[in-house]
Image (cartoon, rainbow, N blue to C red; front, side, top):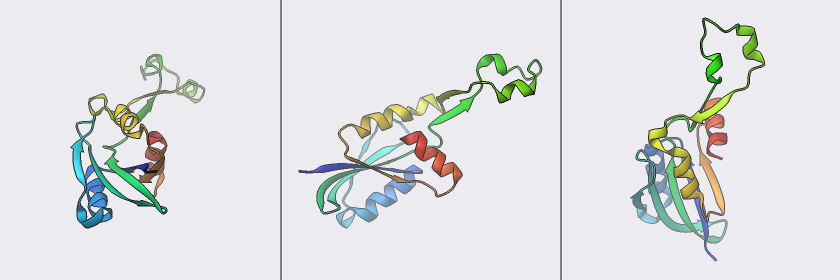
Length: 131
């Protein structure tokens, strides 16, 4: 049985470098994904002793942004103390990039997710956005 492994890097250039380094003799094929900013590099290999199909792609910045609802965005009319109890709204960071849809489509049929993001607070946040 062949497992499918989705790998997500911090940015497109890192995804390309990973695919080149990890594929046999740098023989990853490349195709466009749903996001116009992120290609998908694919190759065969082994993952923990199992035959695997790898798909390596990336983010292009944050996937989501967090904001207050519109009624709290008039800063001259909102008491800042009310923001502590206000709910937040999560929106797609850049709708033109279609990152959530890109990851949803690429994750279909995958058995494993490997995240290649920076080991800092922002990278950790992006990891949770990808998941």
